Length: 614
Image (cartoon, rainbow, N blue to C red; front, side, top):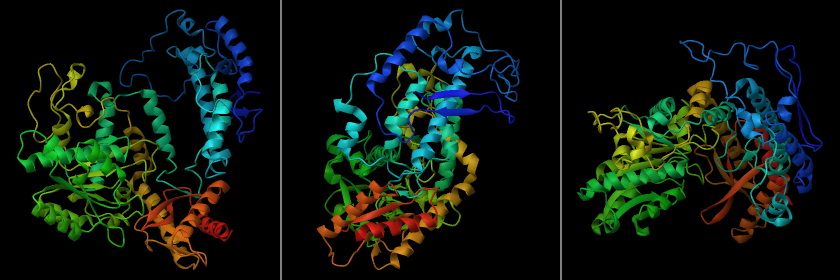
């Protein structure tokens, strides 16, 4: 029996009552059977034969006779055109829905007629939100990892006997049926960022404001590339970028852009180091390419994110251009070690151009000695980039900002709000101390279809009227600042979240995670069965392992950690990742979780002890 969405009469509170009735328990992991489509097919044929007749979803909903002329419109809703005449939307042409009669829910496709579609959209939205809440409380808070299954088993469960993807759907499926399929085939098999003992990768439970902001950004469908494709969305991103630049400590000449994540932000930063810094250091009249790159050197630690090496590869540098400098015992890159590497390379006739530091390494949360590295960069005339994708958020806390100092001394800084700002995927960003460098590197192309966005961007260096007929001078066009053309409206969810919480509220969430990590480290230090590396976490990542008697350093101890991690994952009671440090395997708890408590940390450690003892 498929899910039925019953929207009853208004309750005394003035809200509709939505009831989920399903013949399949929400925790079921069984795929929707293929032969269960016959009833759906019959429903589609009936709906198509009636043309504009209302779908099952809207037929189940009573009319709101007490509403204003547009059914379902909130009585307190702002006027359509604030400050101007109240003008109703353009009515749909006669027979408009007939062109969608082939679908069982035409009102969800041809939505321009408010009188016909508003209630259908409301019901579909309510049903989808109900499915999301079912996921949250039937799955996400129940198991940190979905129903126990290995890769091959889950492929069979998802794809069925075919063992792999089949053909694309040939005919429509109603929205209630699709929600049933989501509940059955997808929801039970996800990793849960929400579970209070989920401390795996940097995947936090997203703030409600972020989730809802993502929905609003998708409904408005703004393209944040050329300004007039998303006029106010460009200003929202500009404002969020300003807030992030302020967080880093940059002044008014700085700017940046939002990206898909830290990988793309680091990629852009390395492109700036090549095309701005190397061009100047080599005395060229154009950015270096080909053989000009061979003698350049960029310095980073053995704890750097893989994206720095990937960027170097894809930007045309030979592999030897990236110099890995060993981190210290606390996994930090130190200034003296980089200075020695720079001196050796200069003596060999090479040209150092950049340092790539990290503030919040993925492995351990370590923060490089940014002040020392900035001193080296200033003295040696190097571009300093800091990958603070994770760690920059510590600066949201007045108490813990000291853990990530001196970011303002870098030429560029990566910040990843979908990590410790608790944002829904995806949103990363690159902040640049001299913001004009972005357009200098990426803004030279002039596609004719973007002609309204060809004028110079606002910066201290720019003035004048721009190219004739190609837009207003000073117009903000983000396509000129990075690799992407079409860009999704990532800023809105962070804009809403920041306003909803305030910087102080963000800081409280960050502090709570740092405190939980410190608590876990103290518990580990006090327990002879466990050990941590480093002993004191720099931020909210704790790397530790179980050390039972009789297991010596080496392959057997490493296998023991992997077995504990796998057993924890199968139990569903928590989730940790593993990593390699100093040649050994360690459990890794990355605590970016608003739902976690001290009791959850204690329970996790005790569970690991039980698993470790077998």
